[in-house]
Image 1 (tube, rainbow, N blue to C red):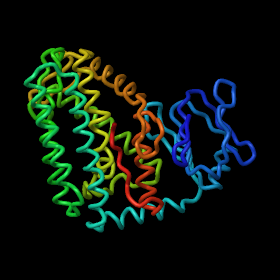
Image 2: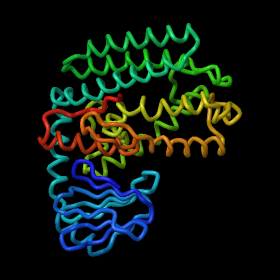
Image 3: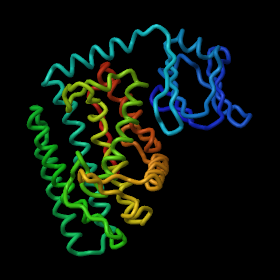
Image 4: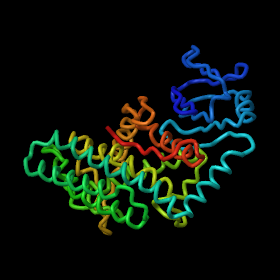
Length: 343
């Protein structure tokens, strides 16, 4: 369990949260693990088997400290909170910003800048592991092109221009994706990104893990009080979680794409675990899906240093941290949205 910003994250299974005076008391394995004043917390997020006393729930509701419950894997379940005040103001500001194309562009640019930078950094990391000279040159060329696109993005304030650069960067990045597969890739191949339907095994993996990630980001928005349907880079469309897709952009290269390559390069999955349907779509069998789900949860446990917070956290906490930072920006607590740049 750890505090980031003004939010307490409790993931230790079997933990019990109780009220002690004006404080929240966290017990784990029969010992007091943490004691902190409730008024210092904006929210408490509980993952899995974490129990909360009714007295603490009532006290937190009175103090406007929301308690969110998620499954151990991060699926949003419920939120306990008192009369809503701050969330209404936050969402109204979110809607105002989304409707203002010029102000939306500033936030959208931050999402895209971090996405391009993170795509480039992961390509350079793959470059160090690649032995094939032709693939090394492909990776080098893509990294150079992404650096140019990042410089071109600069302070662009037109949404269509920003989206155009994001699209070009995505094509450049995925053009080099197969070059990140090592000699141990065991027959997997990738030519281009295809979604509906995924037309090869790698695209099926990408689509599946992106779906898991967007659900995690949606849970983070719900816990933070943001409306996952109203974005800045992705515009409104019925049924589309536009803000979740926005926040996911900077996290995809680091969490999802790296996992796909790890599964393939380390031969943790095989081509035999996929079915090719009559419609042309590739899907995973149950055993492969189980392997991927387990690997995804393990990936989320990897620790990284957050460049803005200057604190270590695990990848699974990143969606929540970025949602909290976006909320702080919308409230006016910080000047700009500090997107996540992976090191």
